[in-house]
Image (cartoon, rainbow, N blue to C red):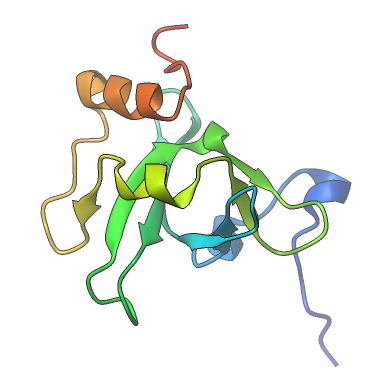
Length: 127
């Protein structure tokens, strides 16, 4: 019998990206705010730039996508989910885009400044 390989964030601090995509995201009130749709890598800086959250809609239809700084998320220490410190109303008003539309230029630092500011983080290119 093949052993199921599960990420061990608490033990090793690493997890495969394939285990994060599709993962449930909750806020501090433990309300489901969506799931991770994509992870965007900053190849020049060798880091994760953004997590793209899918929020709203029904059965994937009409859901809006939100890019957010990777630092805005943390792993739950007890469950397989991520925690985002943003309430649902703030997320509903966040800058977002539709999955079928043209996605933002993630390398555009002016756009990135707005995203990082919305979530109260300092962009890595400003530090």
